[in-house]
Length: 462
Image (spheres, rainbow, N blue to C red):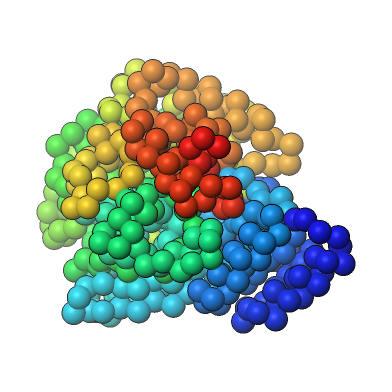
């Protein structure tokens, strides 16, 4: 940020007078709590934080940054933080968490800082549900800007396919209404192009008439059922679109805090979300139950408000990194290497996550979007917690684990890539012509790269 210390202090004081929400500088007691989200590795280190309470606060923060030659980052829950903002202005949106449901139109208006659980809870009394992800604590807006592959993805497609409108503050400080009719280029870019084009203050999304699903997990010991990954792969070839599934593989530590059945074991957890009757769901998963003795079987009819139990992911903030590939299919020989390369003998703990795609995800939406590689059949990722000084080791371990798949990948999913990506890696998430269009739109709407995005797309010619 340009200017002397005194000038900046005066400017920040003036900013604090213009916004309704709190403003924090590094000397404030609340600064660390405000800049830190779910991802604890490499938090933002801004010169000033604006705890936005409405669109006017966001406009003021963007205008302040532009006037002082500073960059802007946005953080709601902070799950997807990949590259920290150094200096500049951090806009915290967690105070903007209002959700308004229109049950007749089957839509919801979702403010910038709302997470999926808040949307789920608002929709549930009306027998409706959003296209939320596997971890409902994730911010709804940021998830949707990256496309969004959730529990009902094979039946209903990407979350971004079901957006009707965004309200967006662009680099010029204007609040724009972005729809297929108004600002169609931005509407295309925001659905899949991430946070490169402004600050979304809210979005209107479709809801679907779902109040429950048949879901949960089947847990197997990889040593007892060594072919579990390949068996799941073969099983996915014939399942209906109403069934979205995934498999995670991880070594559980031998600690008392771990459920006894899983303690000290290398576990494959098959996650199931089926939109249909319990009897039909049970019939569909019977081949999986027949694979061998399960350590746990949590499959049952779940109210959608309890959908977090399908993946049963940790909800405690921690430091982590991951790498991701999108694949047309799963090569059985490469699949067989994962238990060794990313299992208990790996240098760091690895959580392998494979998601079955296809179905509605593969079909173009009614209004075109920037989401790339709809033809991918599977998403493969490796995630690890990162202890101090381990980041290089984690990166090397992930590269080795994914090496058998090199040459087969068709790209990557940015929403499942937790770590700094270079320009070529970001480019690989999109079709070439779509990436060019995104850079051109960035040049038109943010030519000086005011916005610091998790997955930066540079302005064309910049």
